[in-house]
Length: 153
View 1 (cartoon, one colour):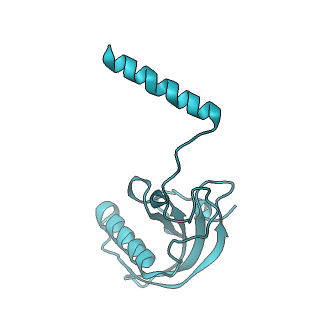
View 2 (tube, one colour):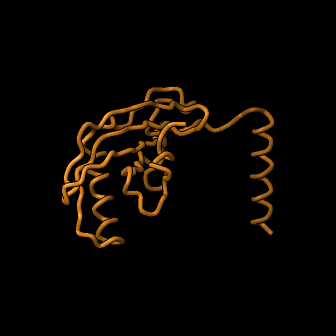
């Protein structure tokens, strides 16, 4: 009974605070890509050609090839990484950098690389995340056609 009463009191206080327009301040420590809780600050995440971004792409590609495709092919290097466009906080509430480059594999093949960096897409929503696609090597058609789903609309 005591637990129910405590829950009812907390709910009433929350509803009252909402009606009065009072809310708890957002902690800036929760946000990794902007300086304020209103998502109006600059992008503070890595650039498209940042070594941490490129090494994450290399590692994810190598892991997927070894775990699912068993080809023995690895990504040797990424060249020409650059930002193509940037979407700030509106309309999606997630800032996104759209990037392209060239990926060279150990079998001698070269592919166009399309990827994006997004805020709040790391583990448990903390940090940045990256998704990538090699044009012509999207075997499961996750970003089909021709990696279009990772390109700006």
